Image 1 (cartoon, rainbow, N blue to C red):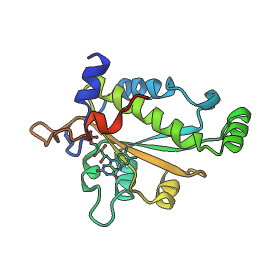
Image 2: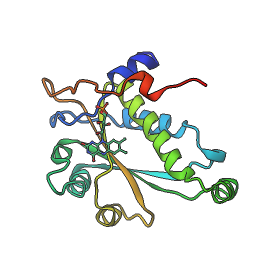
Image 3: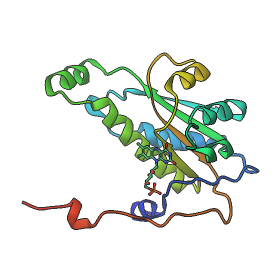
Image 4: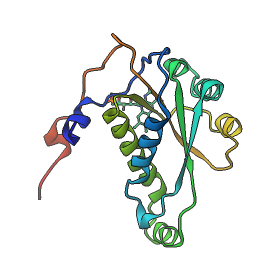
Length: 175
Ligand SMILES: Cc1cc2nc3c(=O)[nH]c(=O)nc-3n(C[C@H](O)[C@H](O)[C@H](O)COP(=O)(O)O)c2cc1C
């Protein structure tokens, strides 16, 4: 798949094949691509915690409240993305420019991660609805959890949502 195909094919997978394990080499390839993503001053202010088996189930539970993310319990792998430290230059830049580069960097890394998962034939869903305290405890983390990614093979016959996007001209202009 070329990039356009990946962009068109990737979707938020909310239906996983519970009988199919995700190969360790694929998890590694996905994280290696995430690590290749650009970040402000190359500081890579994030950490990825890979959760499988019981840990994945515990993390999934911590993303479920008010009826949200029930599907996450079927994902064989959950990847927790937590904050890491800025390097000196990124920290100075963020202060001087009043910009939250860390969130931007985590977003870009997540885009790479989910794109590579798609290229590997795997489904993902980015989860921003979770209990930070519970996940920190489950994973032994002492910094903020920013996103959780459910990962697994899509269930055959599972729902593939149709892409809904704003019109190009609403989002793009030229001056
Ligand atoms: C920061 C962020 C947080 C999200 N949180 C959730 C979530 O908690 N649960 C969920 O089912 N989807 C979540 N999504 C998925 C979005 O709903 C989805 O990306 C969007 O509707 C576009 O659909 P697509 O990914 O299928 O193209 C999240 C996406 C992002 C980028």
